[in-house]
Image (cartoon, rainbow over all chains, first blue to last red; front, side, top):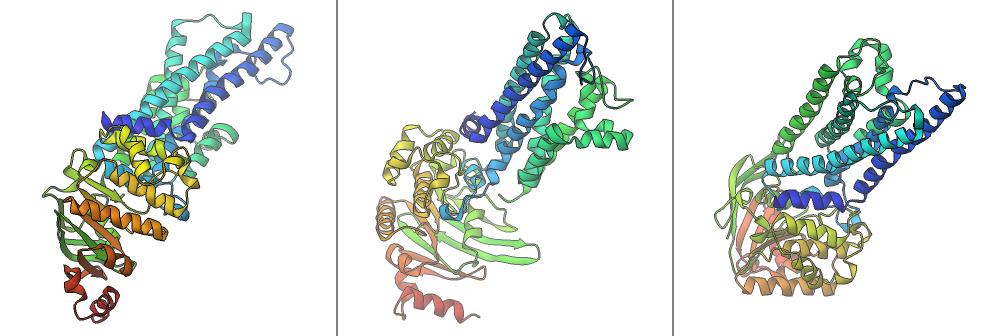
Length: 257
Length: 233
């Protein structure tokens, strides 16, 4: 518990954590609000304008995926901050030396780190999904679909998707011990150019990528013609997350700090 | 008592430490001296469980560092200045270090005061000077009020006042029965602080003894060091 407390303090006092929090809680609800208003207007006036679809079934759920930008920043910096080198004027030290000196038992340390990230990411993911769906329904007004039991499970799956992607980002960064490449990969994929979408056009195997595998569990539409069934997709996402975390744990245990 | 016995370490095919053995006794300041790249930092990192040795054993009071439950209460260490993330404040940094070892939060401000950083407690570490970074590193080492201190090049970047301050601090702690292991390539500073000297070069221990034993027959510790290391080249 001491080490977990320390890891939570570390997260809470890292400015990048609060940037990640603001991005995760800010971007998806804002997009849901804008998109919901546009859709509301289009359905009310019958003028679709430039909208690709006027089907409100994925409204809110679709915007949740943009929460990945903030979640990735959180997952990456939770571990990359350990390896960020101080400027030479402060002695070129890295935090990992203090971290391992303070808790030399590597398994305990890794578990505490993962647990702290999980606490933060799970809270963020739940709140982000809730805010996004509420914003979406408010913006859609009378066009919001009736809330059903399926929507509850879609919401939970969407939040789990964000949490699992935090684990993937964390594991990947722990393996390479540098935040730049994972951060560039995740942020680009979630916002500018989706490598997953490009891969989906090139090969059927793209449906096994973590994001494309998870989408059927909370989105009605899918960019691929034959996506994985929702439950299989969830399992594939879990395999990605657990795989990265276990590989990272094994390397963290063996490697010199 | 810090006890290092038969430590060997390879980086790839290159042997960087060869059968390194020495002791640092309680009540004394042990100076660990050698040129840059001699193996000082690697030895200390193995002692602190940060790096793994290929062979040998390093213990503090008979226990490997990695088996200590709250290590910062037994051993305070400083490597590469402050091991703090640059965007964190000095106080926030020491707060998590204290929490990790169940050290009361009150020690954070006490230590910042002790090392002369009380006014910079809320400043981000990335804005610190080298001397301030060194002082923050020392605050980290002192946080658990440990009986043993392991300091790697602690006087780098300190002004003459800072050097005197650290000399007095280490002397006081050694006189109170503490074990101090201090690495440096600055012979003049070590000659003023250390009771015992361990000389390392090219990953091998070249000599161990009291300061007087090592210097015997030479004008200064620096002369003794060069005669010990260059004779073997």
